Image 1 (spheres, rainbow, N blue to C red):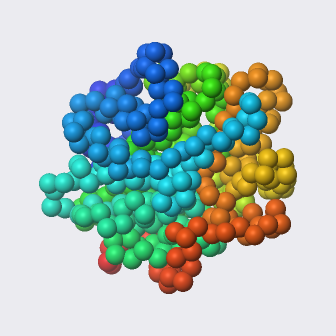
Image 2 (spheres, rainbow, N blue to C red):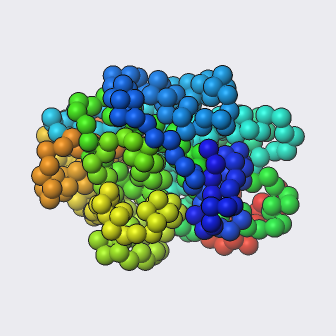
Image 3 (cartoon, rainbow, N blue to C red):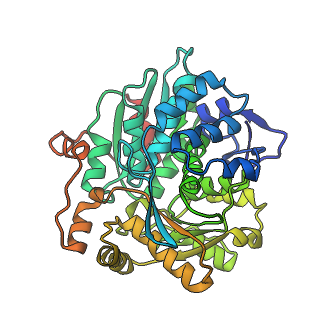
Length: 432
């Protein structure tokens, strides 16, 4: 796999190791593959009925052919993707892809664990410490902390917006210690993300630290997220599913688009958004206008300037109509989200978190408009207990917290509070 910046011409090519360890190109773009492998239809049909681990190995072997030997790659995939992503049927044409069965109970576990393994491999003979900077709107930080905790030669600094993550999410960010530290930022996720991006262009920090990022700006996050789209296909009956993706920073959707480019037969993608709806508006109007994010119940999607939109545009040559052929976009309010959570519980006994409920809303709207009869698969990206207050209040039920989250409740929070100001963040890093 070779990669190029979304801001550069194809002559400025780097290796996967360079892209993973340094995250961002010098020109401020994002790394994208220069070429993707194409699976034959017979190869993809042959995945039917196979477990996720086997499907993941097949996809990884093709994507990373020549990057590292299979004797190293296969154990990396097996260690990283050692939990299921079951497809739960609600009706003959509507299913849920559950992506919350990993250690931090969120879909970000796929990318964080794979990235931790990959960085460990690439940095195995180096003497320098790798410093991972990561901005989170909720789930990314917890997954990265779990994936990188105790990894030799790596430290992680997590930035999260104060008051805009759930209590359990915050504890997943701030209770690890050791090589994991957290900064509580008096601002939004967009402020956190902007500070991380600025840090990568700062010559003082680059001289002092060997910086990398575990946000979806790092291509290592997107590679394993493509695996579970193939895994969903392997579990479903028939072909040509419509994937409905709750979307914030659009890494998850971009990974699905990469899977489609590799030959996965997907009829459509639906970008299902909350009030932070800059991409659905682009899909409807052809105009992209980033804005300050607003706070919603689906906080992991509270992103007003999604980074991965640059990758989406690169895939389609910035051609609006071409992107619209593959992706449609809808957005929903908090009241619609709560109503859908209640309907899913009433009609199917299914307990959904606010992000998954937005996916379900997108599936219903798509079916109402297109009436295709195709299999609709919406992604459930986090365990409902991570939003326990919202879920219990909406459904009027008692929800048990999994043991792996219960143990966090009595651990002390350890985070440094900083303003939403890059100078303050840089001063914190330089003073350590």
